[in-house]
Length: 182
Image 1: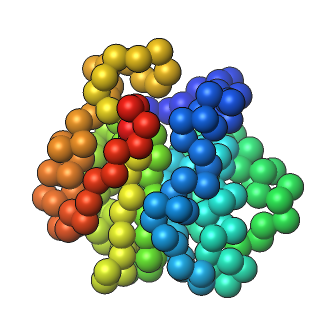
Image 2 (image 1 turned 90 degrees about the vertical axis):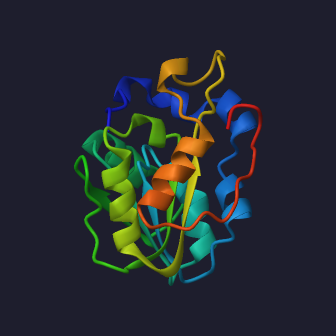
């Protein structure tokens, strides 16, 4: 995965981002159950993590994964400022999710897929860690030119994500268009 520059941390919580991609959106769309074990893959500073942790409740567990310690430090600060303790921060490396087989109910990936160096390897890892019936939710930039987000050549068509997920053994459940960007 390409590494996000921590000097741009402020961009992850900008008013514009909150407008087009509210942090509670995954909870509303995914329907996380209380007591679930969920992975926030590429969690960054925890923009979505707070709402995810609240949704799964004190008996649930959020695994917040990122490659950068600086991001995990920012995440920890954010979670602790909200009084949330139902999370574990995990530093991951290029192609691994450091969890056991069939250990989580869901994997959430927001604005990260386009940065993956080898999506098939990560998707196989997602398949490995998901419990039977577990779900993957991917939110990422559509391949349209716009001011916010990555350059056009870094954006991925939803059909490509779906195909790669199916090739990794995941079943396609549906697509929800969010804003024009996602």
